[in-house]
Amino acid sequence: SDGSAEARLTTDTNKKHQDISKQKTIGAPVIVETLSEDLSLLSIPEVFKQREQTRAKNNVFDSSELHMSSMSEASVIVAESLNSNSSCSYNQENDTNVASSSKNRKLPKDKKQSYDCDTLTSPGKHLASIIKAKKPNICEGNSGSDVDNIQDNTLKMEASSCKETLLINQQPIRFYCLQNKVAVVMSKDAQFCFTGKLVAQVIYGAIEVYGYVITAQNNPMEIYSPRGYSNVSIKASEKFSQNVGSDIWVFLSKEGIYQNQENRLVDEIKQIKPGVTIVLLSNLENKLTRFLHVFYPFKLFPEIKNVPYHSWIDTKRAERILQSNLYVDNHACKEIIVDPRVAQEVADKILTRWNANEWSCTLIAGGKSVGKSTTMRYLINSLLPVSKMVVLLDVDPGQTECTPAGCISYSLIEQPLMGPNFTHLKTPVFQVYIGDVNVSRCITRYIESIKMLVDKLSSCPILSRLPIVINTMGFSQGIGWDIILFTIKLIRPSFVVQIMSEKPKNNYIGYLSKEV
Figure 1 (cartoon, helix red, strand yellow):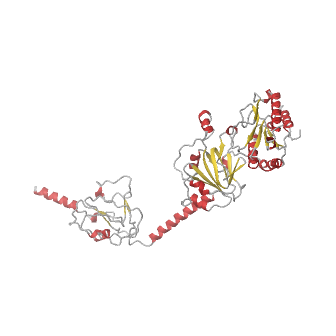
Figure 2: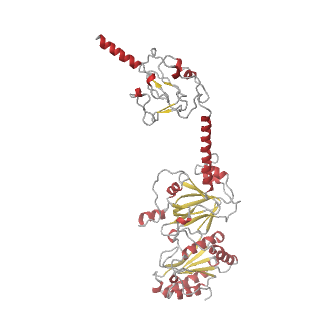
């Protein structure tokens, strides 16, 4: 019994004293622990004692920590490394051989364990104490090169951030995602296309869509660009006066963006230059879009689901908010192309006659799929900012613009046409139902209906003095040539715009003229 008691005493003594000389990882910080609160028999070597030259934390020295090593209570000592080339910090994930006697200690899994030579902690009754280092500190004895390296790394990070910001600012179009909207900053002459449905509100500068110039003075504009049609483009326009500006911060404050905030969008707006355009875009939801979503079998508009996290200036995040596909590079989309002479030469001639209070009527003709309807919308939108109202005389019963198929009519257009025909259906001023979409089966009724429309329009002293745009059929072959000639003879247009196709079968057999 005496022998077993002596052996037990020897074992307890060995547990009380940790042989520091057997520590293998001399080049790393060392943790000295004891399983007892009584350290009277423990002699700590001089090299492992904490020095008082500890770096101030938040410029304040803690005297209790500086003199902790001289106190006769249990403590965890983090000693300076004997290897001058080794780092003063230690990460437990990189070395599992240090402090093997602390196997029974349990730490939270979601926190990394790290030790630093600038921190000294005294445990109370329990010795499982963790010292965390949130920032890399500098230990005494290290050369000034560590400070220089940290400063160099900081300068490199700042330079990299400045370079990234400069590259983003050099892009012609920048997207900034807000809560439910996207702020788009467009440089001079920049443009992008999209597939979807948007509400656009200009808060600085102007944009041109479908030939119509939208400024900050306009109400938010609904724009449709469905699948199966050419993509609508939004282009920064110079057709506006810089003096007719708006208070940008009034619009942005409604979206939670204020002038005193510090972010990239605010900085860019503060440095805004003439020629730059800022637009607020949002997803368009109304009765028409909901009806098409429920009852129309073909999905005309994209449905973009949640995507992995993207930066608030990433185009992918903007697409998710707007539920539209954005194409900054025009080669990636099928853009609507209209001859610029339509908005320049033709529109100017129409407005000249309108200002002179003369009969100002333009007929657009061509074969199938040559872009008559698009050109017609483009021309009407170009006239609206000046004339405020335009009369649309629609004599195409197969693909009507504002009414159901099988009818010919004339309508008063007061708002720009920002999409295909089904997006702007309205009650016409006068309409005739001819009963068929194939004119070849009802030629006489078709001609008589056109004559009735023209007589009705000519007899109105107000509408007859407005700019008039005529949309015709794409019936160009066979008797279609005779029908278009008779239509021109009845209406007597001021101008005839004939659109030619690369395919001969889509063209008339000859050139049209206003004089027949």
